[in-house]
Image (cartoon, rainbow, N blue to C red; front, top):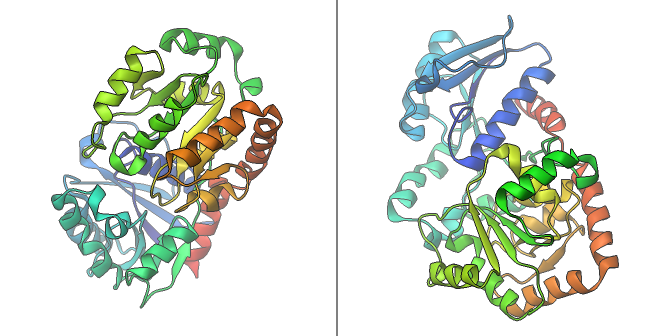
Length: 364
């Protein structure tokens, strides 16, 4: 087949989406059973070297100022011009051009509209409508599939689940370069022991109850936070973070280069991720692959991803979060158990397998 792949986020874009696109592209190239692959890239990145080449690999640079409009109009135009059999779109498909296969990352804006601005909700509102014309719908977890079905997606087209994989850079501290670890610890002035959160700082990520829980654990190590403030944060979060920072209970690192993240992750005592809603929860998988005990929400996709390899808590109850953290801090045998279970569970998520399954879905 001649397959078009929406890869406009390959060089830049929303952080989690860029991670997914970059890994999908790399592994689709490696696992390609013989199809012609046409990668649609952002024309702003025309001068950047695309790291893959060969007779079965083509690049097409398109305007990407608005992902929905680009997908709705430009990709089908090029798809028809190039004689493609189908196009794998990110989030928004099209009613025009070759067969549309739509990779929808999540529809959390439908179940939790309070976490999205009005312009965001309006922008995403076409996603369910356009999905009705898809030949294939693909999403990232069984949890997200159920959410999509609850809001009417998938009535005309079956939804396939395609789990994310883990990147090889995420591995336990014992398998990392010790000099690199020490350099990262010095660069960010990381304490000898710390808890860790990685992700955006917005209301959906639920940082407030995590801070409240830590306030009730006097001897808890400081919380290191990797991530930047997003559109809608929790009321009073900035003030709480400032106060905890002054008391050396929180260390705010902001956005860090990807090359440093595996080191920061693997040196943490506990990874804390009390998010209220996730399509998948990639940071949880990265933490498990790093051998770090995970505490996360019992809701949404996190329990599916962890499958018994994490301490699951009620994210809206600070007392539940506090109990979970306290159990991990006070019982080294539980930390060891969660670490070992997490490492085993993480082995099941592989971008190679994801690419192979994606080809099977498209070929079917």
